[in-house]
Each structure stands twice: as structure tokens, then as C-alpha cells.
Image 1 (cartoon, rainbow, N blue to C red):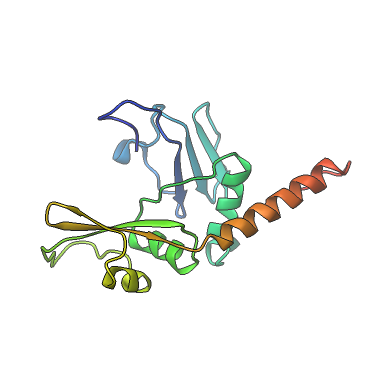
Image 2: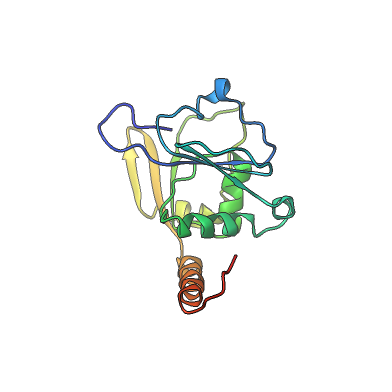
Amino acid sequence: LTVRYCEGKNPTRIIIDRTNKIINGKFNILNNETKTIIFNTQNKKSTKKIKYININKELLINTTLLKHILSLLFNMGINSIMVEGGSILINKFIEEELWDEARVFRSLININNGIKGPNLSILKESIKMKKNVKYCGKDELYILSNNLEWLFQLMVHNLSLKKLKNNSKKIFF
């Protein structure tokens, strides 16, 4: 999750580690190549490049987890993310409508085994209508857009909290 084959700034890696199982040697994501933010349920000591943020275990079973994480990221100045994850994580973003653009590749080749991908049934209408399709060889790339109402609400909510914080001597958590 770093820039390797072209020039540019490394993105901040954001990881949700629900089961506290990140092992440095396996995925090499705890190296110091770029800033990394890890949301987990255990307090760990942050370093210069790796920041651990504790997630309340109650949020893991609650549907507000992703909204909570996005709100925290927004307050850190991160307002754009690219989600690379398994089908569970991607399905959660889709189900909760926490996305503004999806890029879906569709191939003529059937892949009959492997790890099942996310459920894209709610995106099928756009794919059926061949909206915003580009071709990469024989493969199709669909660039799908979503309503950004949730983002507007999040921004208004965060701006209201900041206004309260700035106009009061009390500390809000």
C-alpha cells in the first residue's frame, strides 16, 4: 500500500484490525515507509509513523463503526479514501451507502474458484445500462457514482461540533 512504480507521495494507510491480529512480518504494513493509522480494540503505543486508535468493542457489532471511523478521519484532515478490502468490508461500505465512487472491473473470463467478491447487486442497474463504461482490452471498467448526502451530513455535523468547541470553554470528547 505504497507508491512503488511511479513517483508520488505515499498515501496514509488506514487499517481496521477488528481482531487485533496485524503481524508485521506477514503483510509488511507496519514498516516505516509511510504514515499508518490502525483502528483496533486494544491500546497499543503509537510511534512516529504508526498511530493506533482504540475502537470501542460495542462499535464492532454496531452499524455506526464505519461512520465513526470516517468522522475521526475527517477530523484528522483525511477527506478522501480508497477502500481495498475483503468482501465484508466493501459490502459494509456499499450497504451503508458510504461511498461516492466505485470502480468495478468486469471480465469475460469466468473465475470459478477463489475468494468470493463483494455483493454488487445494488450496483447492477448501472452495470446493466452500461453507464460510464470504459474498456481495458476486452474487460469492462464501470465507474459508478453515488449520492453524497451522507458526506454532506457528516461535514455539517463535524462543523457544528467544531463551532461548539471554539465557542465554549468546556472540553468536548
